[in-house]
Image (tube, rainbow, N blue to C red):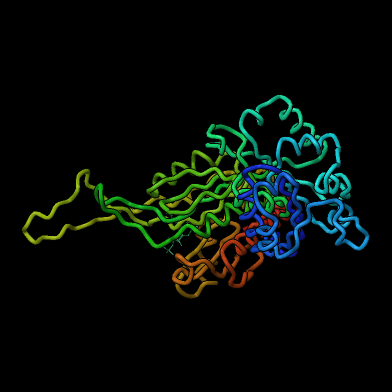
Length: 418
Ligand code: CTP
């Protein structure tokens, strides 16, 4: 399921301080199961040694078009033919100008020009000073490279090695990795909008105490990430969790169930898929105190009374657009619920699917998943139940996103009832 597994990546390094990030990127690519062939320009070798890149990629690094190691002495042809993608990171302003003009006076530029452009995509991650990035020449070059079918990644923003601050830093290794994974992922949700809730909610008792649960938010964050990889425009409404936002995902932080409902209702218009993974607190204290509740020395303990929280999924599922989605109508909202159960998963998940009025209910065993990195799922829809065997949460999320995409297509072509 890992989109980079088995891929062969030619990683080109050109001259720039961001070469240090290429070392980390190379390592990350190998960890994802890709094979990496590093090609460096002479300028890149001023910033990082081929020894480092060889050790990380586990392959000799290429640097010269006169390298005699290749039996036919044509490294520039052979390297490009073997690749699934050529990724230049960092790509200097000078190297991008070279690509633009089709110049080929070193191995890397020669290989880029000689690669079969129809089958071997070229992706560049620019890295330069902010003035260089803003210069009209670079702006023109970026626009023309894109028009030529070369994928130019975004740049980062912030402090630069030169001491200035602005646009032009190379993306971090994990950001480039995320973009590359998305590049190799079938864009099954392209043009779709997806809204995800994740994590626990926190219901205040007083300003310093509250009630929450053990949900880590990992599954919901993984689903948001997988949906983004599949091309969706993703909004993630997150309860209090310590997770970083997946690349390209819009995140709205909330605390209580009522805040989560408010955020969901503000976002749900125009959304195609709603995935409710949040472990929403079913009850909240009836009277949260404005001030910290103090011990008064009497030995008496406070008594908490609870009232029920709104059911976010059921509220959304009752809307006319969600009802249209349930009937498989085009333009409807497709709702996906989760059920954390302790036993009798199929029976409880099927009953919850009917009770919440959603087309797809994903069941899992709560104690076996909270806080963990892996899980197993049971997908229950109008056709029955499908098991998704135990795997890490990102792998499960990718499978679930593919299943949702399949159901969207099925719904819009044939219609499906509850
Ligand atoms: N959910 C929600 N708002 C709530 C409670 C639950 O949106 N107030 C959503 C969850 O995000 C999940 C699904 O409803 O997608 C199932 O939640 P769960 O707590 O397992 O089920 P309950 O309806 O609370 O039933 P029970 O506690 O009896 O299992």
